[in-house]
Length: 376
Image (cartoon, rainbow, N blue to C red; front, side, top):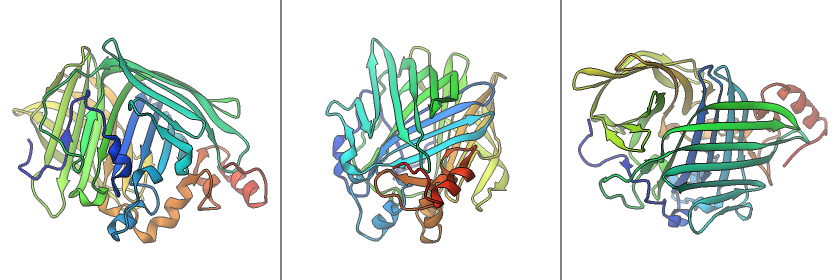
């Protein structure tokens, strides 16, 4: 059930492109998201962005009254999973001159990586060609990611200004295939259900009035179920957005009640709930159980989910939990620096220990400290 104004999030129609003026909106952000998951819990997430709020220093500068422009902080995030566990992680920041966003809003470049997302004949097609250096290694992440699915049909939503938080799922049920290698050796071969959306705002992340959010998507039979649950800073009623998108791209907004159960704390103290119950008119719509976090940080958790729809279908989904006011706090920045690799001016000598393939990280770190191969 949607809360009264001020609203925290504005779902928008897919024919509305993110405004490229966001590149210059100091403290703002624009990111595009693709994920894929199969029944075994193998998966992939790719996020490309300008002004990603999780980058070291970005939010703290906004809080201090000296915000950067999103165009100054382009980044690319690639994470693969094997049986629900992280197998590869790379959050790579590029200098401003090494990233582009096309004037027509459909193509991007980050270093040697190329991305396109466009609608053709009622289908949304995403093509990603990855070519990324890996810290502490002469190897590179290379490969192809392809998403093809129902383009989400236009919908009528409340107007959204550049200063508000624009969120838009772009696909209905989709197929995602990926073939990724590291140094020529196979990393991931995936054929599963895919999903694609985008977020953007000309207001800084921590100034949006969000205490925390829970987002998730469930690839049900013949439809995609998506929920975005937000709690305001300082207390107040939940703002809940729940959508069903069918194979023709048609969207049904679902008025849900939400119950959180089984509170937990993750490794770095972030609270979350193992179970979510979403009901529509008193009847079950979706039940979600968060597995142990596969991406476990002080302000961000990512989990595979075991979901059951109102009609009893059981599906593996994916979800995230975020606390914006915890982002970019000074005591945690050194750890975040280790997790984010800048291709031109690395901020931490310990990038190899926290990025790249999970296997072999310690050996890459030792080699880098001893003066061995280093990328970027």
